[in-house]
Image 1 (cartoon, rainbow, N blue to C red):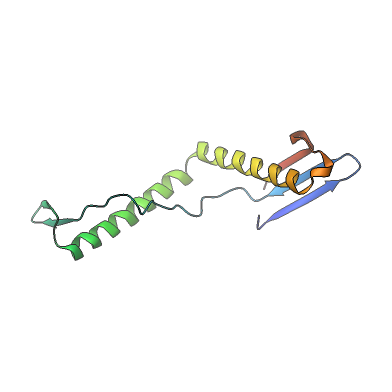
Image 2 (image 1 turned 180 degrees about the horizontal axis):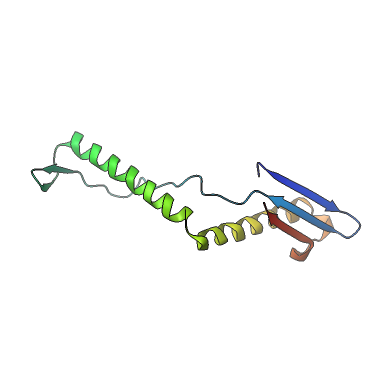
Length: 114
């Protein structure tokens, strides 16, 4: 909500919200998944190779996978639509919770992305 505008119409019991379009800023990979160490040597992968090489390879692969995943998620219109819907639901719930006496309905809250 770094860039946002709230317009409140008390007479009509209506709230208009302008928000920055949601963007994918952070992806967290689960650190609890099992990782196996591999070492690349002479064109073959050896299971349980030396730890330093295996850890370096795993970290490089993980960074590359995260970059690829971020790019795929950012360039997917369906994900953007889901992010907008989630943001709208979050904002509507937030507004209703901080204004319980107004008895607002979803139709009383309009959200626009800029």
